[in-house]
Length: 407
Image 1: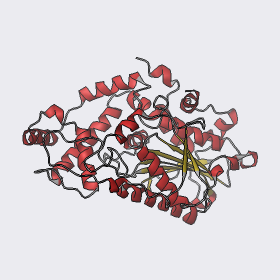
Image 2 (image 1 turned 180 degrees about the horizontal axis):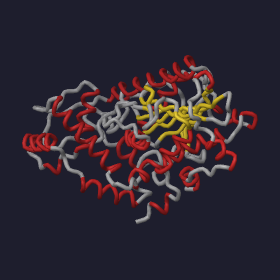
Image 3 (image 1 turned 135 degrees about the horizontal axis):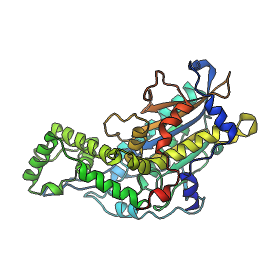
Image 4 (image 1 turned 90 degrees about the vertical axis):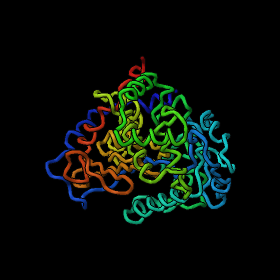
């Protein structure tokens, strides 16, 4: 619990750090040639997986063969999974329920598949190309002091991380330590278990959400077709099953076409967006995504406050966070970058921290989503002064998470 509290608390800046940030927004952005990459943080969704839900009603048996979700073993990086304190891996009851609940064919619910492993390996290769070859930032081989590695405590996110590391640094070499958190401490997704106020806000936002007319007609039609009530058709669960089928080349249910899937996808995305940001005060997003932003900003501030001649080279250069769509969506919303599309499997957000070599007090943030550079709201360039970035996101960072979570 103490480790989680440390993560959630917004880092206190020294007077020197504050002065640096006050000066970090010049009238004209520095040229790229003057800037040096100092830190990269990547938060990514796991790769393609089997469904977490089942369709209501009677449907032909859909087989998810065990071979679809079998690890490659020797061709992948070895990991050692620990808790946040370096001790034994915590137990995840939710993960245990999923991996012991088998689909027809033998694959567990929510299990990373061969397709998902390929997606994550490809992501690792892309990161290697960008941050080792295109920008000479990372070492060719894995160096423990250079890379901080964190995952939520689910088999699919841990395995996704294994494949990203394999693509990034290769399968051979030293074992990589991966930190995970208990269900009570987890900060990488909206955690209603530790935040009763968030659960209450989700319920309130859900009551206020209404389907658009086209989505209503689609749900009504499916309810009649499958002989179930409309209440049994949960949008996010329905989307989950249909998207998983499409990702793995499996057929859609009888009389369901891609246009209907598109309507369901749009409606589920709008619903999730409303759940996370439906209240005008922004409190839901603050409690749902703020803990993640606290950690990312904390890493940035530590780099800014540690000069190169005072041990900055001992700080990680790369932070990898293997998580979920419910991690990526809040991050995009907090930065004003959500495009109203559900993040695909292996979707990723990268925060790059740059320092101006000619004016070391000037720092910049550059954001990539799925490898594509993004302009933050109101910014004419991809490079955003750090002070501007902090002003954008700090409103979503809880000052006292436990207190704000109380009902």
